[in-house]
Image (cartoon, rainbow, N blue to C red):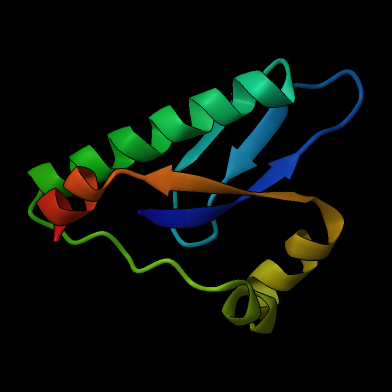
Length: 96
């Protein structure tokens, strides 16, 4: 099963935000980390379904080493929590 790195932003008094450096525009949120992670998996699924419907492939997930080498992602990787969110094989193959 393929996993995508998610950046989890949590600040007191605010919703918990989750976004994917490898999936531009794919983001989610929730009132708690647990809720945000459930919503992140749903956002990833919906994002993959839209790509598949458009006949576009899913971007390949980058490793942490590759993300740390990317100046646009490196600072966020250091500043926030990370999570791995699975992408069901059927969704990846449908989009590829």
